[in-house]
Length: 118
Image (tube, rainbow, N blue to C red; front, side, top):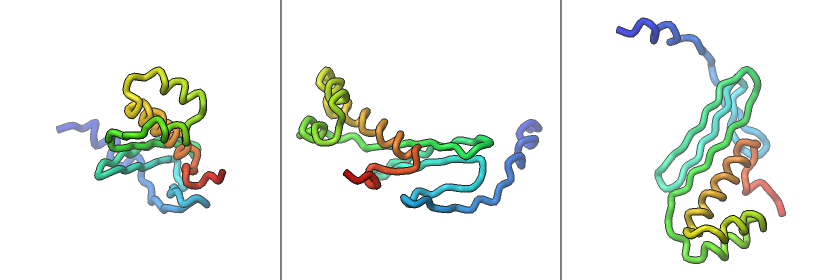
């Protein structure tokens, strides 16, 4: 038996109520932040527990070869990101790294790429 396990069993008793921000992102009014991402049956979840309302973001993409990865990159990436990408041997893989990092940052800042107007 593990007596230490029972010690923490009920440490965090919260009745979570889910709300949505203006962009539709769900949140709870507890010292907890979470973010979900899904792609083609794969799911990623990030959870952050703290005393203040904190933000956390995550993104996941299923890898598949993009025939026109460079053309796509030129449409959506910053020139500095394109410079990084131009030095990589696998443009598709490197594009996914940049894209998921950007989405994670946006998701952590309570918005999404779809909510940004150009």
